[in-house]
Length: 350
Ligand code: DOR
Ligand code: ZN
Image (cartoon, rainbow, N blue to C red; front, side, top):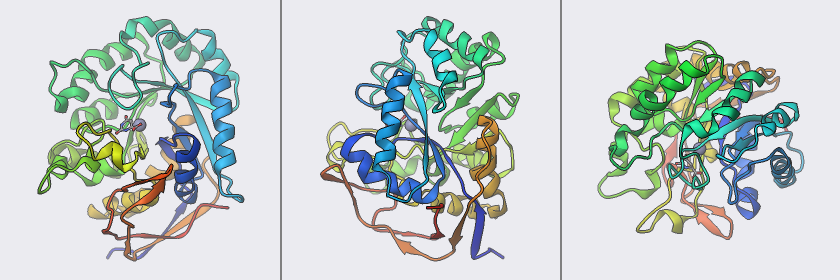
């Protein structure tokens, strides 16, 4: 029988977009209610490329939090071909920077400053391997000749396998995986390789892009894949494998930027993130494994203490609003106007 109440160690979100300024102020509380910590992505405009910029950004996040919140942003640097090798040592020495993020140039939102040629950042990656600073990878090729649904698989073959050969001790996280190929690669790798899985890739397949018409709010990068891949992700997340942990990739965009001729990639899921994961785990009768995926595997990989607080979910439906405020406009969240099966009844510690 399905439990109706779920109490777990307070989870963390190991992949999150908080944006900046008014947008940051609009969204951060949703995450702080559900998670004790989050790895904050650096794809701002301009990108966060130095420890000094990351420290400033962190202060702006802390200043945007609800008064009593103890939420901790864990900062990352955006890897560019111009990153000096010394920045790695500075990151390692800082108390607040935990990883470096690799975006292939052109792969997604604000990725224009990303890497065009991996070999140009080998010196930085070598320093990361030495300092044991994790490299977080947006694992897609951007070659226009490659079918958009194959971008992740081809990235693994062309770039990830050679990278692992060259830097066997590098700690890396393949972010927001979407394919069986990624599941196989990561589960077959040693413990210095891990992956995050989003709630939307666990709950939706590519049919959700064309459900009675084109659905721009379900467009994200990497794009949703076919059902066999979704099933492989759900298997990986729920089988207790320590390689896999929670990373929402919640990515708010104002409605106008999604509902347009060339819409931005990203789903906003922070408003119900943990509740969505509970739905996914419940689908395969594995709610008992949610805590390890959401609250243990991530801190263990990042060598951080597990959280001490608890959160409680109850199996009670609630209706997601049609929109949330976002930086003077609005954002249409995942499941807008529809119901979610789980409710957060005891949020993360305040
Ligand atoms: O869908 C996505 N949105 N994927 C990403 O990699 C970036 C993100 C964003 O920043 O909007
Ligand atoms: Zn992301």
